[in-house]
Image (cartoon, rainbow over all chains, first blue to last red; front, top):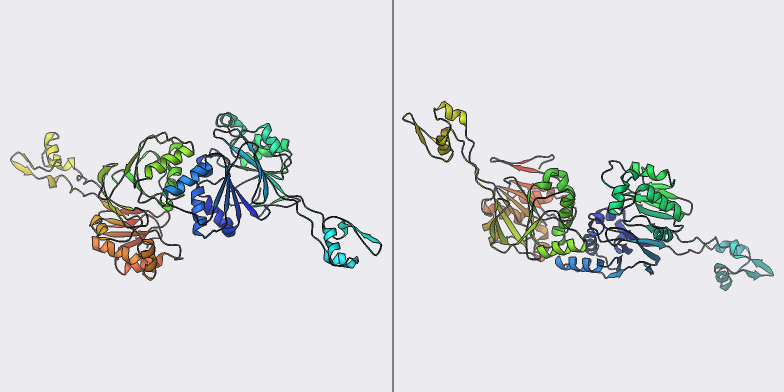
Length: 287
Length: 287
């Protein structure tokens, strides 16, 4: 997002997938956003940090997460006698935390799970539209301060003729927004956090027929994830974190699609591309 | 070994391979023997312990390793809020440690690496040969205490005729012995530890042409592993822990084979079966 990479949670083995899908990530601006301190969400962090070091990363790395994330990383690295050749910046978040990390606006809300769980929302910056110098020249606007005025959104007058910015500058595009739920029951707080996001990435551990388990373990069903997306006005929904009790997670997609049509399944190695018009899969199969 | 499983070291992702290769390991007698506290040797331990718990293991699990292994496991489980539904017994080893763990005689020697590294030797119990009741009957030995005497290796007299144990009991088989080097330079101490083992599993990080790196990082070359096996009188040698600088680790095999012919490469998912006569691969390809 805006030339920054955000990694939400990092279970065991994540580094292998990450380096395969993003071999050039080593020295990119990277923020690891951790939802909660359960093993399947954090046990891959030390290995990822080590491998980035062995790959000669020098750029600082940002880690957001609940209280304990800093101690966990620090203590594990101490036990294995490892120092990273780059700085790791930690920010332990709370309910309502807001800030800019890796150039992206981040907001945090507390979920409801068996461990303290935080959901994240990212909002990319609005990008100015492309300026067309050849159009400005054709309209008689000379290179120089007048171009700057047009790029900044003000009309200029040339030879008693008014040139409007829209004649030479394409419309600005608002930044993309992404929500990530972590592991949680749905809640009003999450609906508010995820208001109008372009993409909501939500856990969908169970089918509605196993809602008793979702209530017991404080997870969401596919239907509940779909309703969360609908109530928040999300444009697209990506489901993830499926219970292994379902041989084929397509059943979760089908359940969610009855409530929210623009829903997709996260699968190992699947990449999505968000465009102003749509969410596209960069890989086959896509469903 | 003798119905016990030993897992030497446990890097990130080991649990996935282990459950694939040994799906029934969940409640088996299991000993994890850790050579040293580097990330590629220990970062898979917490995830394995969690998954064994989620698979409802109830049997205690033994962990051998250097000082720090107990604190590492305890602290990581505490950070992720996990309790295992089975007991974990720790034994922090030292140079010269000896003991019986999971029914197997274990000996430990200090290696020479950038972290405190221990090499392990396992010696299985001698197994009594099979007793053939039908042969005893045919020789006129009645079921009862005389059978026991024969099984214990004493001749018996029936109707003034002497029956020797070897007539009714197959020869006993000595227990198999296995050595594992961890990460280390070769040394006299290791030659002594690995004397006459059936199988030596040795690191072979480098080729001899990169011996400078082996000296700097305190690893072994393939030739050095082969010489260690030859000097110790090992029957078979399995090489593991290859530097990623070699596209195809076959070059390491070739280098070692010039010195020690009965050498094999450990590869992801490859299983070996040790018989009294030979070391067999249970999988193709084998080389």
